[in-house]
Structures are given as structure tokens and as C-alpha cells.
Amino acid sequence: MNILNIPGIPTTCKNCGSSKLEWFDAVRNASHAVEGRLRSQDVRCWFVIGCSECSETLGTLPSYLIAEAMNEGPKARPLEEWHEDYGCVVWFTWRDGEWLGEPSYIGSPICDDWPGYHTHFIPHPAFPRNPE
Ligand SMILES: [Zn+2]
Image 1 (tube, rainbow, N blue to C red):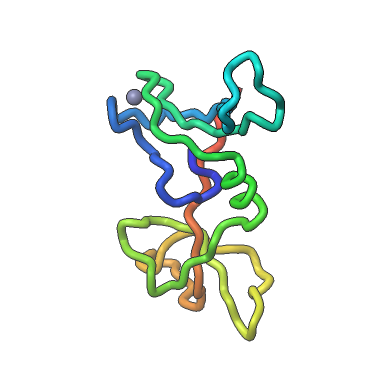
Image 2 (image 1 turned 45 degrees about the vertical axis):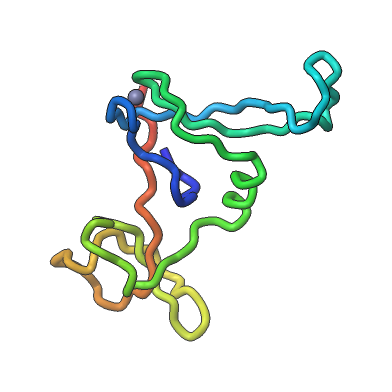
């Protein structure tokens, strides 16, 4: 699940093709201190994305990139960059130097109900976890 819209995060497993991916955290030695002599300043937090089906590790990100993505929010891309391969996305209208303050439109420019005035999009959010 790529809820932060960080480019390059896999959405399927390169090993088995599953889309059941999970994030988990880990710490790594960021210094030259040997195990057993580490202090808190010697370790850094990383986020790892792995496959729930086959346990393949698909990518790692240092925690500061996650923090940056959370602080910045998703980057809106202009209509001109949209392509059919993106499918349905979330649309907004940038007008007169600000976001038009109305609810977003979810769909694509080839939908029958395309309003025709949206200027920017972000990826559609991931589906939530399965209900209990
Ligand atoms: Zn897998």
C-alpha cells in the first residue's frame, strides 16, 4: 500500500506477483560501532515493504523520507500528465492561485460524467483494510 504516494514504491511483489504488501519498521546501525556498543544515536529507523505471501523484501526507505512525504502531502500533477494507464484518480481545480474549495472529483477525463474543469490530480487512495 503506497498511501504516501512516494514514487518507486512497488504495488506488487516482483517475486510472486501478489499485491498483499505490508510495511514494517526496522533499525539499522548507522555508525561504525559494533553490536553491543551501539548507542541510540548510532541507529536509524527504516521502513521496509515486504510481501505478505512470500516474505520477499521489496524495498526500504529511511524514516526521514517517510516524514518528508507526510509533511508535504501528495503532489498534485497537471491534467496534461494524466494518461489512461492512471485510471481513476482524484481531481482538483487550481484557479486564480488557489484550490477551488469544492469536494474533489474521482474519475478520469474519459468518464461520461467528467466535469471538464479540473486541472490537477493525485493518485486514488488505497482501499482501506477489509472490514472486520
Ligand atoms: Zn511475494
